Length: 245
Image (tube, rainbow, N blue to C red):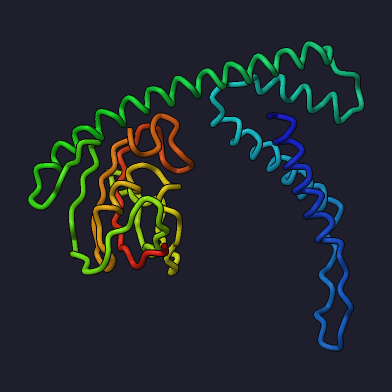
């Protein structure tokens, strides 16, 4: 991880140097070239750039799940930049990095499990209250559906493709996806999405709009997906535009 951060910072700096040294053809209205910095100014800018690289690396490391020894990182930087042999054997470094990766993975798994447990409780409480609202129907699977606008067309079957507009949020209102925001509806096979969608859309008719509240058991479960955290209850506002057989 440290090598990657350093490499990215050095690459960024190299790119800046290359960009700064690019010379464009001078036209008749081209501005006069900027005056070159003095030796003292150049040294100051180099020092500032060097500090900036170190600061950015440190900022990224501060959010790492395992706190590393910054002094030893500096030792490694000094030795490598001076062309010295590593003070620690490569095999020992490799073993230490593998150990840290395992610790980080275990820590992330524990945090994900704790977050999943929290989300289960919060989702259960949310659905318990939502189920009391007038017009909300709770099915045997735990799916909750509220009709916002009744449809007048046909209801899709699981083997159909459907075209929909939708907005998906977490129970705290955080939006994680929206075809409405993108300005383009999406078409997909109903049997190829999460079970909550497959069940909910079959309860709608073309032209209708509904709100689906989907428990994690028929959503993305303990693994979550992208911006969707583990065991999250999901809220979808869906408009069923059409069915493709």
